[in-house]
Image 1 (cartoon, rainbow, N blue to C red):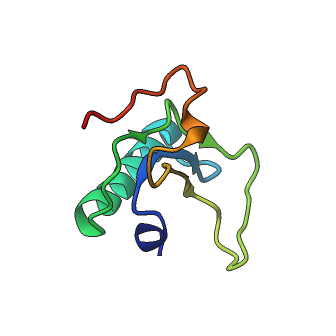
Image 2 (cartoon, rainbow, N blue to C red):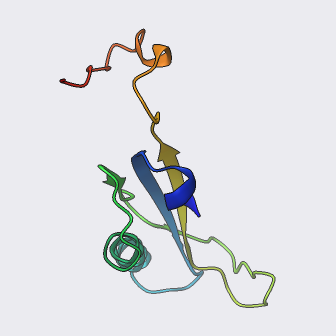
Length: 101
């Protein structure tokens, strides 16, 4: 649905959380985030100029259970759509670079 609703995409940002007690939570979390990025890019053909992976994974300090009763291990995705065209909202942005005609 996001592909259709937002044809122009600026970036995807990810955070990840390992389950309480998992060994090497940062490594596991990073693996999960890279797998999600691969699914978005390769399987779903979701083109985006920038996919920001987390610097490290977080591990739950205590066991956290989801609605299904299973312990939580997850990757959260924040999606930043881009303007569909060059518009006045970009003119005051110091990082704005006009499209070359």
